[in-house]
Image 1 (tube, one colour):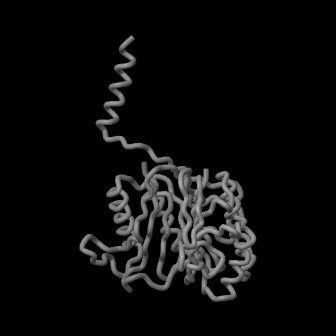
Image 2 (image 1 turned 180 degrees about the horizontal axis):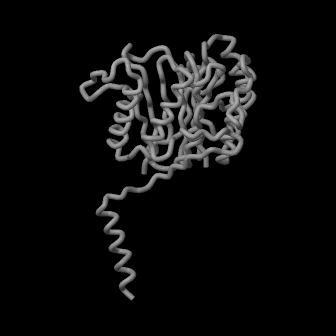
Length: 153
Length: 132
């Protein structure tokens, strides 16, 4: 009769040893009546105790040098890498991000296609997303900036 | 979920919004920026910002309804308007005023931008929702 109790205790210990944290809940939905996008979710509903706001990330490396001057797609790759560094520093992962806002200098209609593909590649499920075209970022070489919000624990 | 709408001393809002909203407990939802497209993704109200704003707020209503929330649960809007001027601002704000609780309007940020994802689109509104 003791065996099942021991088995449960062992499972609890195993998950504690693996550093499993309290799970936040993030549901990404596309309600009836709104068009169903392939590369973002119309609504993100999150429950959890910790809100994380990640400043707009640009194509700057750890020494603040701008990478990929003149190439917006390569800049975007650096931006996603920076977002990953930021969310992991808070104890989360890309899958905890509920919403991103993307600002693109001189946005053109076909930009949403490659941006959407990059979002799909970098997130387990695409978060809620707002995409806007702007005239300038903080330095003239910067072409794209993405900020993010996440709910953890 | 309890909500407080606060305009601290010395911070009178310049329009129908609240400077600070505080939400405690419950769930938080983020609604992607809504534009004037219908359920098939087709642009509605080309060249008419008021008609576009109506479609945007109808879409927000659908998104809120889909999670069991209402406009009363919105704590923050961000409103992006292409080529922002006073006429465009008023058109969008008048439409917004018909949907929100005017006694407790959400916090809001309005930004004039260069372009949205399709050249026909003039306004995009995203929302942060605290509910449940």
